[in-house]
Length: 151
Image 1 (cartoon, rainbow, N blue to C red):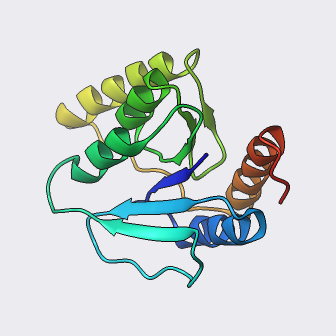
Image 2 (cartoon, one colour; image 1 turned 180 degrees about the vertical axis):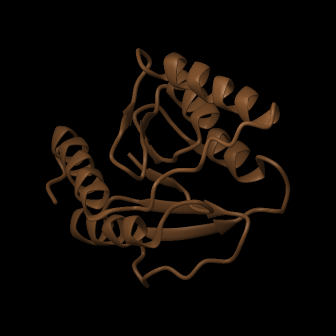
């Protein structure tokens, strides 16, 4: 099992939690982004820089992910594609995306896109809070415990 990270938009505090989890469990952790990244010097933590372009990093994650791998992303269309492949998907705020919830998320995303394109200001996501970090760490811990890898 590998943990994949859609790293371009992943907040630094979440990456730090993932680095600690990978160090403790020995699980492979791979960050994929359009830009160069610094990662801790552990054999099981890697970073892959892909070319620039729309969805290039997403396409690379989809290409590499295997069933039951865990992917960290807030990208709803990417999450949908990954769930279809049998991967587990977790947002950086600790929200578990599942086959039963992703279609509603996609519909809401599309609705908000339509609102924005018609000129309505919808605002962006709230700043990452301590509660968000804790929710992510707890959700990651539950996932790792389920797969026999204690934090």
